[in-house]
Length: 136
Image (tube, rainbow, N blue to C red; front, top):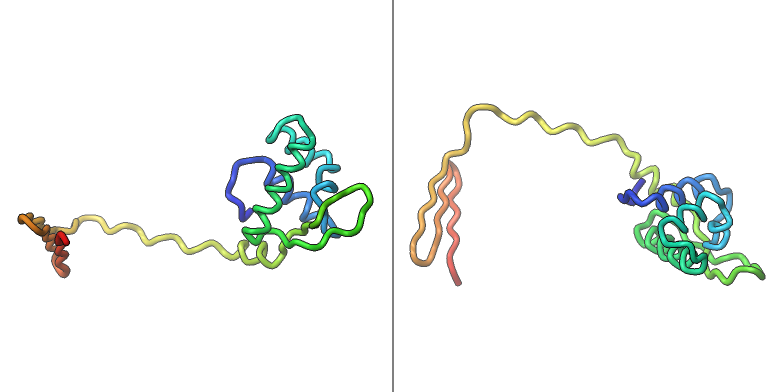
């Protein structure tokens, strides 16, 4: 999942939106038992507060380009302005093959360097590079 968080709400929202055939509003998501349970567990038992916080989560995920945002369908029971769907293009991009492992560290020879301090500079001298740090 592109959102790196251990909070259950992100995983539950991802699961529900991946299965959804149409974009879902925050209210429609709260009607799902798993989402309602995760939201009230995360944000408290007050359903209005939990719904508002879920809306914040959806906005955060949209800003991170994990979700797509659509105008909400006209509905008499919900005042939602937006509906959200899973951004399949980003999901495929993040499921790219894993990066190759780093080569093993070379054993044996450690870098050799000298540090020389003077009143206005510090000189770090490596085998092939010299760094001089001066005060302005």
